[in-house]
Length: 448
Image (cartoon, rainbow, N blue to C red; front, side):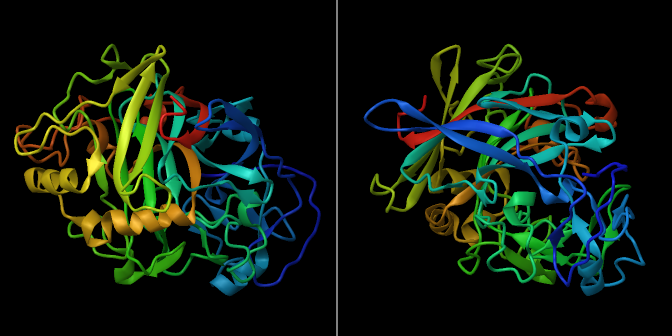
């Protein structure tokens, strides 16, 4: 997540207490087209753009090149406290290709894992240069083509909807003048505390290093989330994550409201999610190289949001998954686990049975389940695309045995064929990348 040192001519600037853009590197958003489809037939191309998340950007003193944050540490002089840090620091634009390995071509975007000294990335689809594209997909479907062939164990590409503000918080967060134009305002149901700025304020209080390049502050950024796709070449899942009804956008948590990473989780949001992983659900020959969904080739994931009335004003009752590969529509694999009905989608019944058989906490239901997630989808959510690792668990919960200390014969432990010891992913996956293309949305049955 870290910006390498750059030498540019400096234009001096000074700002009040706020999260402000700098003037050293112009922010030029790469173009990415996507499509809206209709029940009458046909899809119309939309002229979109993408923007890099603020956490990957260079923050420096407004009057010098001095980094406000280096490695896993805030600069003690520039950032002794949030007010002083906000006054001293600015956020910069980026060179998407040379510094992050992000390239677009028409409806396709490629994210490289390693580019120089930068690792990973997360981007958002923009409606225009200052506003995120919002999706309200109830009674609709979202489709996207994915090439995950170069993603090994321990890495993941993600396609995600988050309950972020369309303007990145500029209209509600005092002093935030960077907004969506600079990828500001991320949140999800894990209530991430590694974000350097939340709601326009430096998240440096209580900052504790978690690795050589990361740390956590006292505050987290919570909101509802849907994982449309999360996977590599070995395993994948899709999931819904709910938050309490009090969470209607980015909620800044602290202490107990941020929850924990272990059961019963607590907090205002559901970090665990009700997920559907075909391998974990007993369909071990469905997804992977040379399997039904052959991950050596590009495939399409279609996510359908089914409501109780069949209309956008109804309440979400089911999240369905279809696949398309080589022009063939493939139904999602059905569960093959004793005690869980042979379903192939996420429903309230599936979530309850899965939790009972696998021993998962009912965190999704405890935070409102389909009801609060449905409300978030009606408000509209922002689409993000990313390539990432998982320093805490090495994505064992996605593609290996998890918890690794549990017997492999225990239902729900095996999630894929990857080993539990996966090595240094920054070295192993140095040449890895993912390509996303042909994003399209429309009524049920119009995108596949």
